[in-house]
Amino acid sequence: MTLTILVADDDLGTRLAIGDYLEMYGYSVIMADDGQAALAMVEEYHPHLMVTDIVMPRMNGYELVRQVRQHPVFRLLPVIFLSAHNETEERIKGYHSGCDLYLPKPFELKELGAAIQNLLERSQALHSDYRVSLTETLRAFMQSNAIAPTNSCALSLHLTNRERQVVELLVKGLSNAEIGSQLHLSSRTVEKYVSSLLRKTETSNRAELVGFALKHRLVD
Image (cartoon, rainbow, N blue to C red; front, side, top):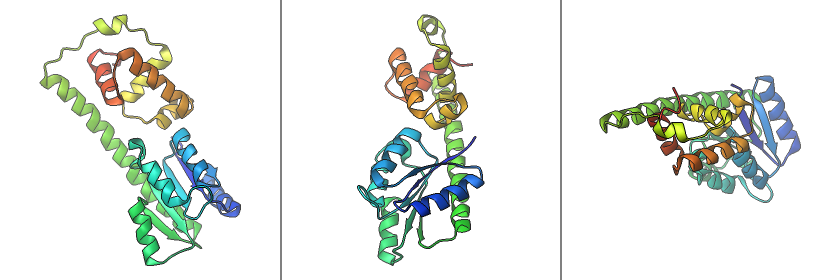
């Protein structure tokens, strides 16, 4: 699976240098030249990591990360701050705002690449553990409450082939971006399928939807 990295910086040279370097190592890179555009890209593309400057037009890096962290799905998104300001107070402010690493400019691309690789490996491991935990917890809940799986609801529930593919990947704990990557769909299109599934199953969130799918054997 190709990992997507968002690079946000108002300096074109910096964006291109980072983007070219990361693409050379197999990452998919999307770019924004200000904080507002970066926030929209986070919501649309669900990147696996974000590299962002602090001083940018329309929205600075501190506010960008603050707004990103307000979305539960992005609370564990790895964030690297880039800044020409290397004062202790600025670095502290960066970490308090939610970044994982504060890298002063000028920086070496090799160091940035190593930091990105490290953060992504940790992030992917956490997501993998979460998927296993979620599935085991739901199965244990069903067994402890003596809920017998049934096909009665599933028989009357009409799902398209694509909806079945999406729900199967949801049960595995994949994010919208990961589902989109496997099914060759945009994150926004995947979100539409998830909304349709929530409506059809009369569930209110992804966890309930996964529980419904397991209980009624919508997946094997």
